[in-house]
Image (cartoon, rainbow, N blue to C red; front, side, top):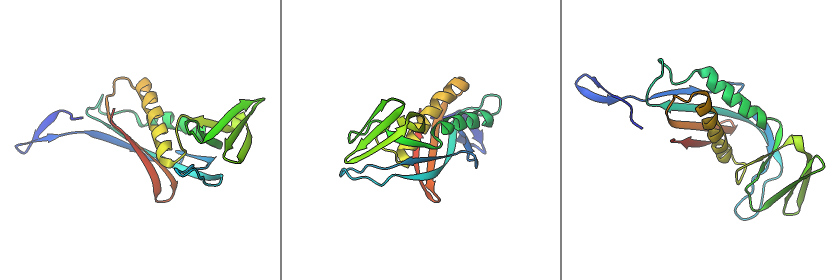
Length: 175
């Protein structure tokens, strides 16, 4: 999305504004396993994920895109819902889950996990990869930011989910 055009030294320049939020407390820990295309899967394991966000808009409202605190609060609330949970990809065709008597039973191939319901988050994704987690977080963040800052017109939202140092998945939305 293009913003207003300004003239600088006899040539037109497009201007876009962006902020980046990458704080030590924007993280979550969880258990998961990836399911591969051939029907195999990783063993159940965990990560200490770190999340960073870059937000872009074509114009400023009162000199800022959005208050950094709004972004941090939205993101922290979202990450707290994932923290210290077993993440289940609710849209994966090779995995089933059912809730009964305060427990969730997850089945994949010959594996069976029975976990208290309050320790599981079933996500609307097909796999718990860092890319799909970034997509989930970016969609949820966009909805929250639209509610918190309805006057802002976002041109790009980028979320990165780092599972280990130097290894991350990204999702870029262009609303």
